[in-house]
Image (cartoon, rainbow, N blue to C red):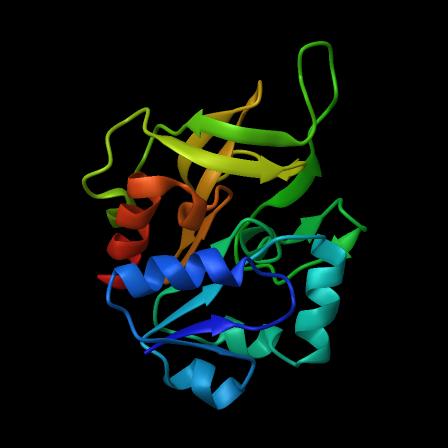
Length: 194
């Protein structure tokens, strides 16, 4: 059973559809016991990092997430709140990934938010097994994790940033695999096979 964490921040319909197409059993939950007993955990994300952390803290979930030893995937804001800090709302986050999330700098020709399809490269994880370098995935974000020791894939806007992170059993994607067509569904499948 896959536990999708319910903290009022996720793109649950698209994620649920992806999981169902893959034949995965899943539940939307904020129950610590269900989260602990799941085979895999997904922390979805759409929204504001400070609000996301406040919701997780209200539900007393950061400590539960930190102690998990099975595969955990944070998506977009879900990944960002697994970093040390976010400039979005000056939020102290969970500190799983060794990164401090920053806002993209607006400049001529650089739109913020970064929205749409962009290629990923420098993929260094089983999460990307069978994914070709330069595969396109869907992003929508104004904040990003810089390159760091936990970076396992990169993209550009226009500077290079972490498209995905990994620390031990924790994974994060800045892009939305549930919105990234066949490539994204393959990445979710890889995660479920970890």
